[in-house]
Length: 195
Picture 1 (cartoon, one colour):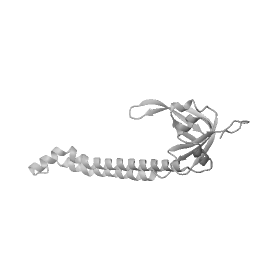
Picture 2 (cartoon, one colour):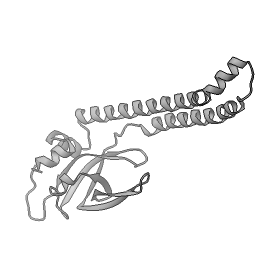
Picture 3 (cartoon, helix red, strand yellow):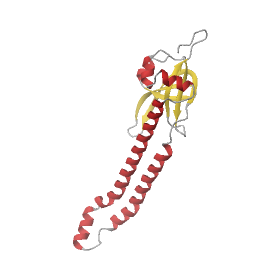
Picture 4 (tube, helix red, strand yellow):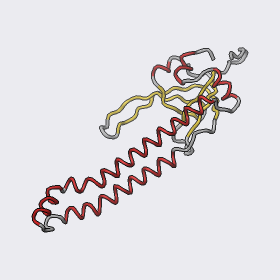
């Protein structure tokens, strides 16, 4: 393949492509996947801790005036809301934080199994909806064999519909996230391969 733009877009070089053809990952690819895994874990742990802090801090902050009043008057009047909120929201928030934490570790397994897909390029524009605002937007999706991955508009002119490519990629254990490591354009019948 001689399109440098595609190599730059997917961040691979000839050494990566040769290793992937042989069913292996280069040291550079292994390092990148390892760093990606560490980042995902750190983000998940950070969000879990933040959620836990919010769950524990919400009731005292929300009911601060009632707590101050009870402390100053030495009575428990007005604290029923505090105790009911604390006994309800703190365990729910802590449970969500723990769920997020364990989900982070279960989904952040190394993506080390190299897979291969071969097929014609089919790039389609898919309309998606942003659930929070009900706004729609278009995303370009690259289909090659069983692989479907979102791409940026800049790549559309560099991969022609119907051209046959071999794609080397890794994915999460559940198949929810895929990442292209390298790819190559296969020659048409009668053409000599360019390596």
